[in-house]
Length: 203
Image (cartoon, rainbow, N blue to C red; front, side, top):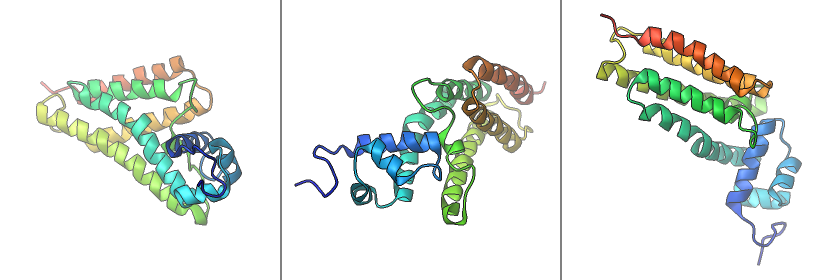
């Protein structure tokens, strides 16, 4: 017997994916329960029964986003033989992801809570930690570059990781504002001039 308000054949994974896309497009505060249930094909009681609350659903949607969208770009960075090549792979993978015509533009982690109210401060803090984790992953790749000798030992990898993340997050906002793939690729070209200069081993 199906739960009240839940259609027969309810696919939780598909419903979560649809919720992720709505949050990605409209942000946490900008998304209503009505918009979520319409996209998910269920009624509010079923949403709460399956996911607990709007916030719990959002957190699951972010985890799904990280798995489907975030991990591939980080893997691109980690798989390259040098730190500079890894940073470039990360940024170029994000350009492709941010401008995919079949998905909302930009990065959900950057765009989903650019504003907040006291009742949604927890969401803001949650996404702040997600962004800090992304910056930490860049720093870890730069540290690996130092250990292997392709990043000079005196390089300020904390500042460089923050710079890379600033470029990355800024491109997300530009993509949402309508920047094209070619325009964002040109941003990466300029950013890599700075990165390659900063990681060039000293003679």
